[in-house]
Image 1 (cartoon, rainbow over the protein chains, first blue to last red):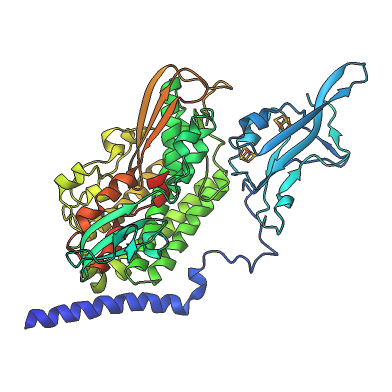
Image 2 (cartoon, helix red, strand yellow; image 1 turned 30 degrees about the vertical axis):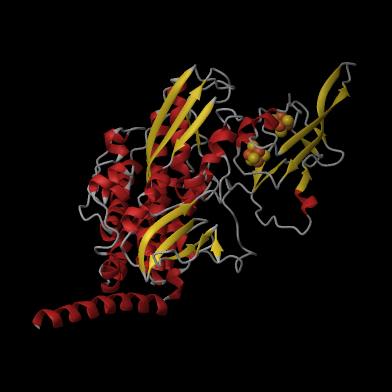
Length: 156
Length: 373
Ligand code: SF4
Ligand code: SF4
């Protein structure tokens, strides 16, 4: 009999203990938040290493660092990158391989960063944007080198 | 009426029902065919293949640098440890010496992964057994670990941070302080975890004595990780076959003798504390130096077979590479912990009630993409 009531007492106490904790957080909702997204959309900054998409930075003269060497294309495990090259006439009359179109299929990319690591001239970096959903899947195919852009002076 | 070509009610009056593949308590696309006598489980048959992505076959056409990223999608809650296993196996073949700094970073990340995985499991176990609150509490602490991962590795789950020879880039300058803050937060929350779930009378009654598996059975089904350690089987790869410098660290292998759901629960709860302990030892002693060994552009493993095992949050993951000397593997095989642990489900659940099946499954802590690969 004594044991019976002891069990009941212990059970109720264990439940109350849990309820006390729940009650504490119920009255202190600020302490139990994880992420506030999308409420904080305007102020949200991602970590600088966050892998959102592959981008190719261009400077103010519309110049990039890509030589069209295709190292990133080879490094990519799932065929996300297609490099179309062209032959460009140099001032000294020689022909040189250069980038024509850098095609990036965002829908295939796994954000593994292997292309960025493989690039010998640091032409591509990971961007921080992550809201990639679109209504038409054709929009996911991107060309990373901007129209009219050319390679930066001094990048081999 | 027929169902997969069989009758719903068998000749012995047993009722056949399908749990899954789209059922919240199976934590993924697992399809269980259950034979019931009233509410008592007579037989269970898992049907697999709903999330088979052919990762092993795919890896045969990828180079040794490229195949690692896909293993993040196997046991996605231990993504970093899977990557580490592959990197270790390739390093074994190449015979490169990994710098001490890289080793320490890898262990730190692996233990953080284990911690976050166990926290998610703790929340889900509560959820499965009818307590929704722990789920939110667990995600709060897990969130700060995810922030560490995001800051240093660039991704929350599928990090792809391990590369053959070390890690992809050095730790973030904020890494140390962020880890310390997180540890402080987590340590203070362990008592909360215990208050809200461990001591709870409903929880105890739903797990104690439920889903028993003996040590012999656990061994013969090939169970590893907390599932086997809950039955008293010593199988911690970090202790038995140390890798990446686990031999230099102080930590205990957690063993429980109960063999039931409660024992498996207690193993994971204690393992979280051990992970915190390991991180504490390393966080102020990360050696200086390189974070990546110099390796060739194109990696070629010598002809032969290589095997590496690691302890993920769910048990032993084995990576087996057969190389014919080319730039991509001839054959890759993963020995995944969840596949073997799942095979013990029938042994644990036969004779219990259908409501207990949920408790048993959540204490095995299955991740279905790892079963199918
Ligand atoms: S991040 Fe990975 S998947 Fe994406 S383009 Fe680069 S190498 Fe390919
Ligand atoms: S992005 Fe880099 S690796 Fe890719 S083609 Fe351009 S220079 Fe070569």
